[in-house]
Length: 132
Image (cartoon, rainbow, N blue to C red; front, side, top):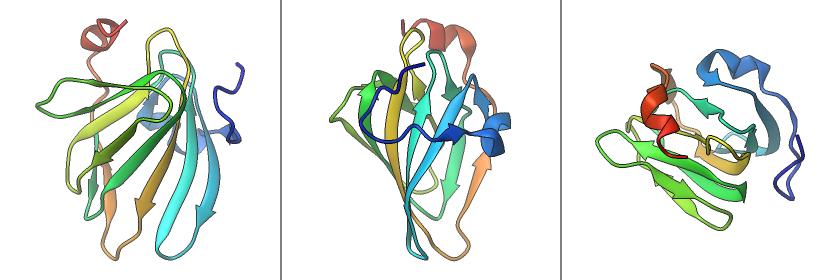
């Protein structure tokens, strides 16, 4: 797969593979005790599972390809390069590539004592495929 963004694609995201449907790649860009910044690249059709970041928000900066994110109870939102998604703390959501296109986003996540990520069920396949 060609890298859809100007950021490094990184290595296979093996540490989190159990929480993804399809292949993703992770390239850490900056990390200290207050914030983590990483480029995440999704092969076509790859999404992460529904999940919640307890105690922290997440900001997604779309940098390549075409993808989606969805907050529980809302419609999926398309993401193209230049789009920004803000996920409030303690909000169930998912994000990933469009069914037939690769996608990359830079994920910005603050760090806080007691913060955690709760991984949940996969995205409904029929609902996701309808996004094509």
